[in-house]
View (cartoon, protein in one colour):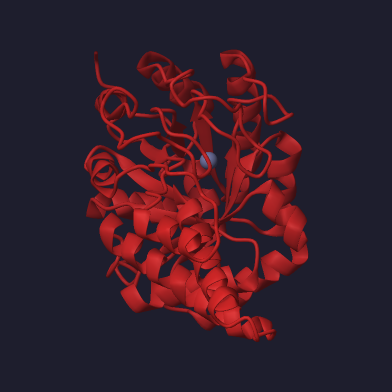
Length: 349
Ligand SMILES: [Zn+2]
């Protein structure tokens, strides 16, 4: 199956009332882990690459690995997504390469660090939408600013500094025509999200619910949504790691989000922890080993296990065969003739 539109994946997820995990990749083993999990659970899936990943792997390596995943798994709908595009040019280059979806994160300026103004965000996001939709490519925007830094991208600080304002979310969706909207509700990128199990004072699920009430048909995206489970932290530390104690977003909060319009959930840290723990365990307990396959195989298996668990928890498991993916060209036609609406339904306050 060729790569498919993320818009179609999310529209189908909305119909089915489930969420779709978006998993970050840098290399072959991670792509194989995700595809192994998607096959095992019969799930549609979003594979995403940050700017850092594209740089690390080189565009062509990464893209052709993902094409191989699509070729080898014709029964699994796969959307290939640019995570946190920092500029029009970044998104354009992903689209020209063949990505079927891009995130334009205009919440930050092009440096990927400084918060941008609302109008700057609207302008650059709209520009990406105008370029992407005629090509059948999906666009995710972001309103509000997440905490933390990952892959050199982020404003840093706590996730509470720039929580999304629901009225601004409505205006942003109306003015840009994005297909999916990432919102800031207190989460942060990276492993260090919360210093204790998060409650309503730091994880603003009430804001998410308010935004969903105003924009009932808009696909919401949760970033910084690894759960950072203690057992994965423990394996790393048991075999010589030095992670500080930390808390992520509990799965039940993500599930509450999914009941309230969240259709895409970004997960990266949990997979990094799983792989690192597995590699550390081999190198620590069997120091005579030197064949990379001796630790990459358990690393891949550990990541596959986490991804399969998330797919089941998010509800996408079992849904790979629910629908027939349409081509990107047909999606482009849908945007042009208005059958794929980019005008959000807005409910009164
Ligand atoms: Zn993110």
